[in-house]
Image 1 (cartoon, one colour):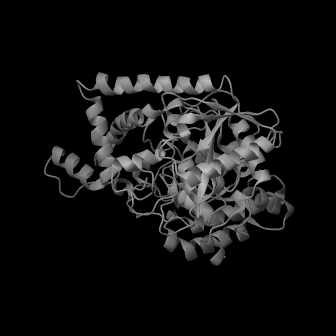
Image 2: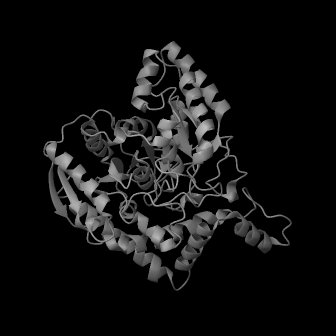
Image 3: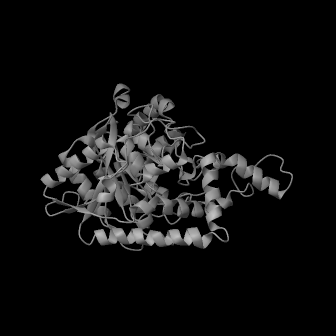
Length: 486
């Protein structure tokens, strides 16, 4: 049962072959059995899940259930969920129960899906390995000595190990696509504003975006049909209509124009990863696509621009955690300054403190113009690079990460960690959509093919990814950890 996709499970529920309670109970047993090793969940809501499953079964019996009613899912622990701990992977929010649901949670509940719990993550979504969590590192089910990627590593690992058929993640600089690549699953980062950020705890407000992680592009399309759309509570949410993302999945790719950014195939790219990506591009050529080299000339500025803009926004967003209104509070503060200082010192981890300090510095008098404003100007150039490229091609393709998953503890230097996002960060700066799909292996660990489109081209990306998955079976591969513990 845990090898089935969301699409297959929905069909089994519709036909009456399976009940939601049976499916939910099966996944809960797997979580109980296996997650002690993986550490992919922070909170498991078993009782609530079984109750929601029974409600979905009753709705199906009446014949008025939505398409995904009864499908189990998991939520990255960054989405506010009423009455459930919402920690953001931080000691700062270890005691916080959200008083309301995020918009995406509301939409999933309305669709009848069943939340199994909240998945582990890098603290406040700051990290590329899921080692920066107050609740400990997550392990990659393909190799328990490897990281699952971050910051949505818990969601990616849970899907890869068959603990849940799909999960939600968030992507600020690659945090859906990179862990999807490392764990051999499919992960979609939508256009900025396509999915509401209301109730999604902010890291960098101009970059954050929620999206689905699942076995296949078809599964991601099912989820996008639920979570995409305008939200009056989010002023950055796009007002344009939402297409049926399933409708165009089977469109042929004949005539598709693919661009390969030369900057994505230079120094620093692992040879086995490059080989897998180029083999994947050959599959597209066999499906009728044409390929040409393109240039994104400002790519090498993406990481420095991002690590000015994102920490600056984080410094502002995280100022609300002061021990006064909610979250961690130090014991016996001597005065207000002591309350602020010790609460934040105790509540935040090292990486979060580092980014707050960087952001505060770049926003300070005398440095705002020199760093923050200049980074925003570079951001505009990066965005224009993509717009220029999409004048000549339909999609861009390249690696999701420069190498396959690295070993736990291998990246001690923060800069070497930041460089893991070299192919993903520019996408967030530009606000365009991107998807990572399994495309092979390097040293026994999964490789992700990243496919990028112009703004609001999610339907095209899902179509392009789906056609690749119809022609290959990389997305059907399962880690030995999941198979041995079936």
